[in-house]
Image 1: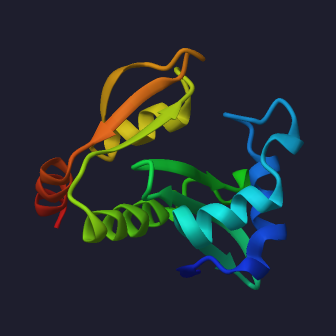
Image 2: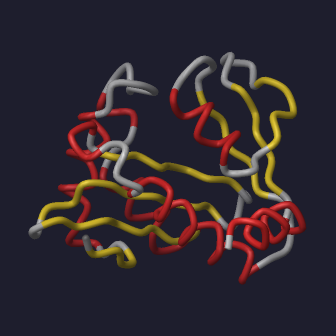
Image 3: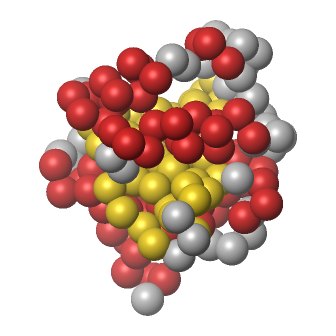
Length: 150
């Protein structure tokens, strides 16, 4: 497995992974066009990918301007291998190197993603109007969690 910063040439495979997921699916694949991915990984924040034998099997993107996680998805065939956890660590470490302000995200309730974020130290702080759970992660909580995992 190779973890690295996402490049523009990765977008086709990033989109493929995004459409393979079984939870937090898009009601319409056109809701997240390539131009949005480009904008997020080049101007609003940064993205990371996990590559296995030349194939992107997971990715994460954080939006530094809006202080939020925009995406974290892993191909279901590669789930439970630590890929999501490492993509998350890379993304959050980078985010807190840029700012110490809280970061937020939303995810559907009663999903593996909800359990994942709880395990990574995120705190549920309410719900968005669309029903997603709103999570927050502060820099002190991230550092505290990292200290006890080592």
